[in-house]
Structures are given as C-alpha cells and as structure tokens.
Length: 581
Image (cartoon, rainbow, N blue to C red; front, side, top):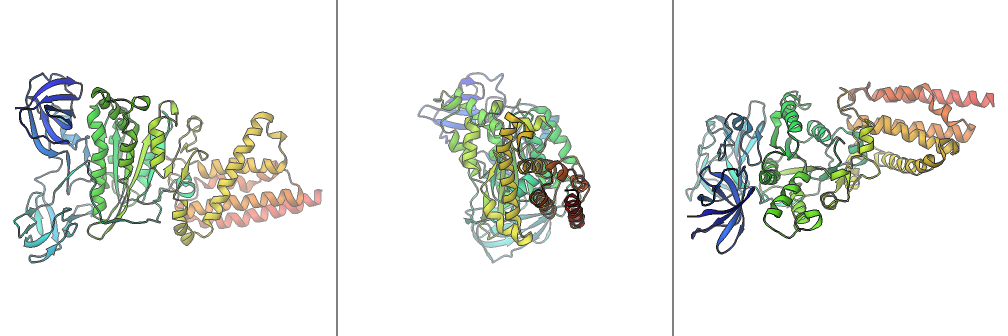
C-alpha cells in the first residue's frame, strides 16, 4: 500500500506499491485522512499537495487514493453558503475543527420543490433542462443535463418535493440523475460557443461605467498596494453590479479583512430585491493563515461554481481578492518541489496559469442554447505598489480592463482611488452602441472628459515647477475644470446613501453638466476676458457640487433645472462684466 516517504510542509512525497495513480487524483493522507491532490507522478511514486496542515504527519503513514479529481458539488443550496477553498462549509468547520474533516457542501436532507420540464419517452441532450427548483427567495435553480450526457428518458419524476439525491430522471441505459452534479474544478465547463457581448456590466461607479467600462463576460484587474481600497471596491462592485449572481473569493487575505466580509455580507441589503445580498452570493473564504495549497485551489473552486450558474443562463460576477496571494501560493509549492524558479522566484508557468484563469471568463451560448456570462474581476496586491512585478504585469496582459489604484489618492481620502492616467479599458468601443442608444452623446462627452484630464496632467507638471499663477487664464480654466471633474464626477462616497450608486442616467447628466459649464467658462473668457477665478466662483458651481450627494438617481430632472439657472447666471455675468469693462 502507498505510504509517505517525505514531508515538506504541504508537499508530501509518496512511495507507491502498484497503485494506478493519475495526476490530479484526490488522496487521503495518513491516519487523519488529510485531503490532498496528486500533482506529480513518476515510475516509483508521486507528489501530493495537501490542503490541510501536515503537523504530526509521520513517515510511513498510509495513503488512500479516491480515483477522482478534486471536484465541486453543484446543486440547490449553493447560494448563501460560505465555504473554504475545497468547498467545506465554514459554519460546520467552526464547531468541529479537526484534521481530515470531510463535510458535505450541500444539505442532503433538505427538501426542494421540483417542477419537471421533461417527460418519459423524450430525448434530452447535454445541457437540456430537466426541471426547476425554486428557493424561498424566489431564485430559480435550473436543473440541467450534465455535459457529455444524453439519451432517451425512461422515467421522469413528477412535480413535488425531493431531496438532492433523489432520482429526477432515469435514462434508457440505466443512468440515474439527481439535482447534484460533480465537476472537476481545474477543467472548464464546456459551452457551445463564445458570443460577443456589447452590454456593459453596470456597477454604479462613475469612473468605471463612464470612463473605463467592463462588459458582461469581461475580465478586469484591480492592482493596488496596501491600503488603496481594493477590498472595499470589490465589495462595492459585488453589491451594486447588475449581475444575477455574485461569487466572492477571499484568497489568502488577512483574517481580520475576511472576518469583516463574512460579518457584513450576510447583513447587506440587496438593492435589486430589498432582501439580503447573501441570498444570491456564494462566499469562498481562505485566509492567509490557512494552508497555501487550499488557497491555490480556491480560485478554481470559485470559477467552477460561477460556470455552473452561467450554464443556467445567468450573468455571474466573480470577485477574486487577491490573485497575488494565489500566485504566492504557487510560488511556495513550486519552491518546495524544487522546480526551477523564474522571475522573483515565481514558477515559469505563472503567465500560463494566470491566462488560463482569466480565460474562463466570458459570455457564451451554453450547451442548452441559453445565454450566460462570467465576469471576472481580480484584485492584485503588488508588493510596495510596484506595477512592474510579474503578477501585475502578466495580469495586465490577459485582462481587458485595468483599474489601477493609487496610494497617493487613497492617502488623500479620494475613493475609489483609481488613477485615471494609468487605467484603461478595451471595451469602450464595445459598449458604445449600448450607451448611445439610451444616452445619445455619451462617446463625445466621454472623449471630452478623457482629453480634459490628460491636458490637466500636462499642466500639472508646469504648476509643480512654476506655480499656477504662471499659467494663462485659458489654462487655469482647464485646471479648475479638471479639479471639478475629479471632485464631482470621479470621486464617490461608498458610504453615502445617495452617492454610493449612480445610475447611467445620472452619470450622463452629471457629465453633460460639467461639459456645459466648461463651455460657458470658455465663452466667458473668449468673449469678455472674464478671469478664471471669477468664472469658477459662481453660486451654480457650488450648487452642482452639492448635487453629487443630494440628488437621487430618480430625480435627474434637477440637472435640467440647474442648467437653466446656470445659463441665466452666466448670461448675467457676461452682460454685467461687459458694462464694467
């Protein structure tokens, strides 16, 4: 029988005794039955990465192999659950903390109301709809035919209440199917084809939706040093994004941060339904003091759960915080296996692993001809805020949106601390048609904002050398307007009841108000030579600033009334200034 021959932290080498062991097979190590996974194989033995602490494990202890890959259990009951990196329910672990603990991720005794969609005698293909299960919060689980399976139905259950393991259909070949599927986490779930998505995922954050948008099925990275607000931004996106399902992965983050997440998420109100946000969320918590191998597996577990809901036809937003900790786990495991290190000690396959993870995001047509999407947003924690380090650099290559967080902005309490000069989005052209259909003129206003902020950055270099008084009045206008854009449009208070979320309509009104104001400033200087200070000190400017946190999304007509007042005020200023001159 296979036995332990070497132990190095979570890496255990095994001497085989004729066992037919495959790469990625799950193994149970030692007397405690520690859960692990085969990651290397040769003629004499294999290497296992163990997902639990190996203290107390002795040489010669026996190994059992399951013959199956590390898999996720997928079925009703996932939503509202909190798991560790290998899908053990944290609520149960908390009261029974012990090594080798095997817990069922889903409640096998709970009964669910099932409504069938097929009958005996019908043929069902892979991805076909078997029936529906509705939770008390009215969320609908769609029970689907597993991939690569098909056949004629010999028996179909009637409408009623069933447990997860009860047979729903039986095929003519004798195969019985229940509500639960098992799927290997490292293998992407199949789909029919990728599709082009032109719909933005609305987050309610102005700098994201308006300047650096992300589409449904897109991929984004949030790099930022310690204290720049990555976790708060991801929690904000989880709460306000218009995705149907949220999968939040706390991968290697500090325990106090994850504790805050685990306490706050169950209490957060869902703006879509008015119920609790946790009811459409799956949380995977893997803190920095947990075994690194489980941290490495947690990303794949979250992706598999997200793909399961995608296959039902839902839009899923997956938040990974942080992929740097995931990459560090790979580095530690690689070092213990004596693999040749590459940049900064990371394994040579770092880039391909990062690419394979973000590649699983996307909008697709599923096997059952439904439309679903997984939008992946990964936080990156570069040491010292150095964006040139390998994880950040490779992540930027494989994601289409880059929201770079700035330490200086965070220190100045400017949130979200997204640096508009370092950030970019490849999806602006993709979402143009959606924005223009509902809000004509979006691309023109967006381009004006970007050019204004770029011009401001050039002028700031001169200001640092000579001071703002050395600039001509027309350039002072640009500086004043850029400051107004940053304070009024780019900055957003995640804790203000009104400002925490801005609808697309309000975002458009705010941007148009800024553009109209700038046009009047330029006219005042061009026609009458009115000083920049006088133009920016008009009462309507302060009135506009207050609107950010005083005008609800439902009252955007306020901006039309403000525009009339602004026009009247500057016309009066122009006439009066002319008479004085």
